Length: 435
Ligand code: UDX
Image (cartoon, rainbow, N blue to C red):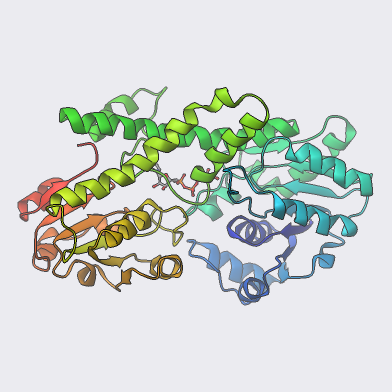
């Protein structure tokens, strides 16, 4: 099928390459010429396992091309909208880029084309955009097909997602849209991926409610961590025990520094803002607590670091391991790790930070920190070591080797991933989260 993808950020670049991998003929558009040039050369603009390989393969096959000229989408039958919806000043989602993408796309649409929204938008946006599209091109149809990909697993989540959700209008236009999307995802559906057909508003809500639920699950276990810290209980053992109940499940019950990244924090705030606009703000009041619990974890680690360093941070050396918001990513958007590293620096500590992938992205937004190229350099002469992102490299560290480099054997395990017995045996004071 001939497909276009508007927006080549995280979502769009992965989607475009994945659609080509599925055998489609794809043209991908972005307003940023530097990004387009890199992608056209097979150079992924962010770290995502598997993306460079499918990008190179798709470019070599001739089935994928990148352009800054939206006019080149003419001739494609399905047009995916994959632009960002960042957090605006009030917490509500900023849909400027989605509006601009649709406005830029409409002049190149033909009757029988499908515009398929993938971006995370406030509920009601799709109906508004659908009217804008059909006002100009009555035979085109706008549908919503939310994306649930996780960074670090983005290619796999695109090609083999847990489920496909199609939000379509009722009637023949909706039926035609379902048939078109089934053609796009033929290989994925043949693998047995469940596919749910719903209305536009439900499709928009599925996405934000999924992220709200995941955020709530993480904040729930972090609230338990706060209580466990007071009573001397172990939140990890607690999570294992409640997680055996199939109704609860063990996934997303890892206590630690809480959630960050480009989606969960902004999506829960945007969802609340939208509910308030709709007059049902009360329904999502609990998300304010979810957000507050989450942010308290960062403050807790800073306080713990101060306690362990004897309150005065000036002149103290702190080794920070991890800056990305999660492992297998170079993304530092709303990263708890980077936030904590920077707060410790602000309080006067000399912070040496190392992340296997995110030093560069972190340095762009927090140039004041001292970035080093290895664990050894980060922990050298440290009075305190903090593990803030659970990279495998840090999980597998030899505590004896670290012990030989530091000034003081004290470690904060911000993600509860270190082998406490081994670190204690190496002479370390180990402070975990909620244990
Ligand atoms: C998330 C959703 O999972 C995905 O479906 C959606 O499309 C986009 O947002 P992502 O931002 O890539 O994906 O990260 P995710 O793996 O969900 O982790 C989010 C944050 O939660 C990370 O900071 C992670 O460290 C944290 N987390 C996750 C926990 O603190 N504890 C857990 O148990 C799980």
